[in-house]
Structures are given as structure tokens and as C-alpha cells.
Image 1 (cartoon, rainbow, N blue to C red):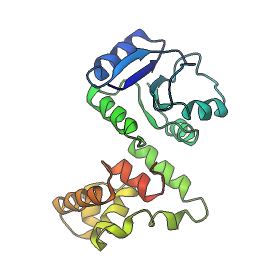
Image 2: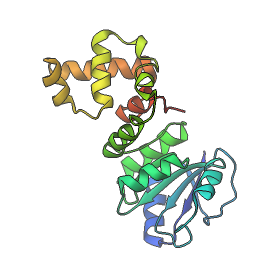
Image 3: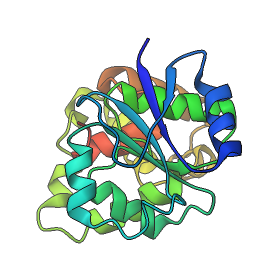
Image 4: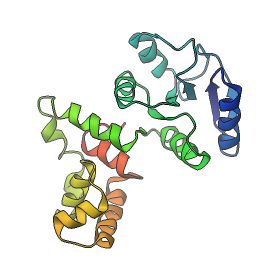
Length: 204
């Protein structure tokens, strides 16, 4: 069973994390200067006073020493974008429901990146500012998809909901779901966030 290091000074939050994750991970509390291997999964409470003001190079160094998931009770897309840029592998609400928290942990443990929908949209906006990024958005396995699957995948990667995709392409929502399911399988991704990241060259 993989060890999950929990970094928080809030006993209530630690209890919530332990109750949510104990069935899937071996939980251990740790300090902000934990000692763990490069594959260690680390859940960090950004309200911890010892994490405030940590420089980018600290985050970058620690991100090479573990799979970091940063949590905030007041998540902010600007903060999430900054942390992802520093190597953090996930960003979510500190009090996420148990089922969602376990999903976040499993995704990051599998080597993927977790980010909420609005954060992914902001990330895409930042990527589109970079030279040559538009080509990358269509060059990461998109050729494996049929023409219609490509259309659906690209709209989903821009943050469009199933209803919006169905209206845009004049198909049913059920058909949208079928195309997305096929795209997930062909591209070896688990969800829309991973699809978005892969199509934009960000999947590890």
C-alpha cells in the first residue's frame, strides 16, 4: 500500500484526510520538510504557517522529491496555476468530499495531473499565449481519433460541457458521451482534465 504523507497543522483536516484515504493509502502525518522518496504522495495544506511564503525554488525542489497535491479551503485559480507551474501535480479544495479526494489521490499517484475545470481553462488560456502551442494542441495523439471524435475532444478540451458540444455539432448528448468515451480509451486518459492536458502536451 502506498504511503500518503499529510502535511497540515489542522487536526480536523488531518482527520478528514485520514478517514477519506485510509482505505487506499497508508497515511502518515509529516512536517513541511518531510523526508520521503521521489514517488511519495504528499498532501499539503496551504494554510500551514510554515508553507506561507515558500519560494518557487523550494516548491520546484520538493516537486522533484515527491508527488505533491496542494490544498486550500479557499482555492484560487491564480494560486493553482502558479503551483502547477512550480511542479505541483494536483490542486484541489482541502475539504473535498472523501470520494473526490480519493480520486484526486489516485490520479496523481498514477502519474497524472489533477486540476479543476476552471483552472484547466485558465491553464489553456496561458498556453495559447505561448509560441507554437496551437500546433501542440492538435499533435498529442489526436490522429488516433476519428474526425468526429477529434471535434468532440477538442471542444471538451476547451472546457465545453456535453450539452454545449451537442449543440455545436448538432448531435445528441448521448453521442457526445460515446465519442468522449472512445477518445478516452484511444488516448489512454481517464477523464476530461487528463484529456485536456494530453491534447496540450502536458501529460507526464
